[in-house]
Amino acid sequence: MIPTSQRMELPPYAMGWYMVALSHELEPGAVRPIHYFGRELVLFRTEAGEAQVLDAYCPHLGAHLGHGGVVKGDSVQCPFHAWAFDGKGRCTDVPYAKKIPPKASIRSWEVTEVNGLIMVWFHPDDEPPRWQVPALPEIGSEDWTPYEHRDWTIRARNQEMAENGVDTAHFHYLHRTSNMPEASASIEGHVLRIQSTTGMKTPRGGVDGVVTVHEHGFGFTTTRFTGLVETLLVAGVTPIDEEQVHLRFNFTIRKLGNANATTGVGRAFISEITRQVTQDIPIWENKVYLPRPVLCDGDGPIGVFRKWARQFYVDRDAA
Ligand code: FES
Ligand SMILES: [Fe+2]
Image 1 (cartoon, rainbow, N blue to C red):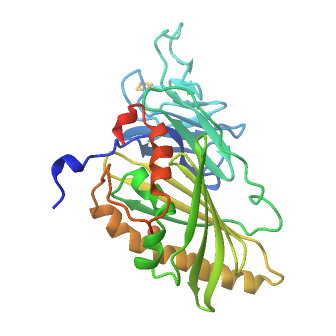
Image 2: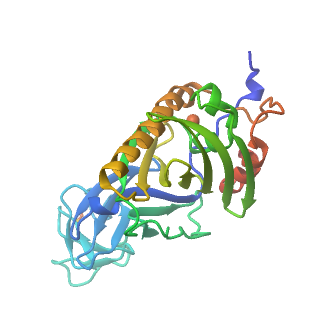
Image 3: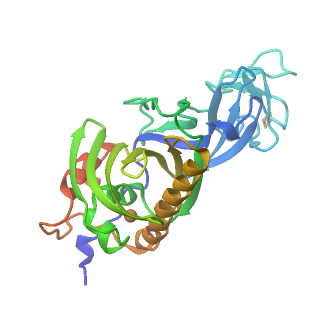
């Protein structure tokens, strides 16, 4: 029995860049309602091709811009009375007024589009971005396959899911990998670098591989596997609200000489990672967060992870 004083709730939202859509889902001129961070938002792509995110509700009489809004040039036009707002949230047009009311503006969100992903910056106190998302050399390269996507909605907090990468013992005991990976972790500002070796099951038998994970805050993680074949998993975990997160996996594989072999290896790899996630989900959804866990000498670098994780909360005592 764990005393109540030993358990605590992690804050639901931490600062960072978070995926809100995949680039190919948003054509120029498209407008979509999205719901993340417990808020209603509108995502649109201008005619010139820029992805933009605003709070959803029009300051005029409250219509949701994501339901019926249309793109006009660089702005999204409200479906109710045709007021238009640009990507900075400034009102650019009120077609039946002589003067645009000075207060006619909407909160805009910092957006970056890189690696085929549309991401927004979240900060609990609305502070500007502290870092940028790196462009990955594999994405868009001729030598790598287009992304394969998978996604899940999970009742969990970002930090709990991020901790998986350093929790070496669970790979063997929960996921039944053939060995207990050896892992080391180091902190470089907002990036946690984890290096481990692991045995993975594939239809072709067990394979030992080296796994290099870079966690850029809680919202954007790259995992590179070498061994059987080189693969890159670009993962995103975005809080939907205080209960749930949206997990997205985007896989790419270095092309082998023959396309069928690439597809076969790719499928085997994706199904192995997917199998592991489906084993993690019931753990994440039912566990408690322990600020002072009882660890043993065989555990992975969980202490390093926890130290790194604290920087993403405004209240550092929170986690
Ligand atoms: S509610 Fe948006 S223009 Fe009136
Ligand atoms: Fe796991």
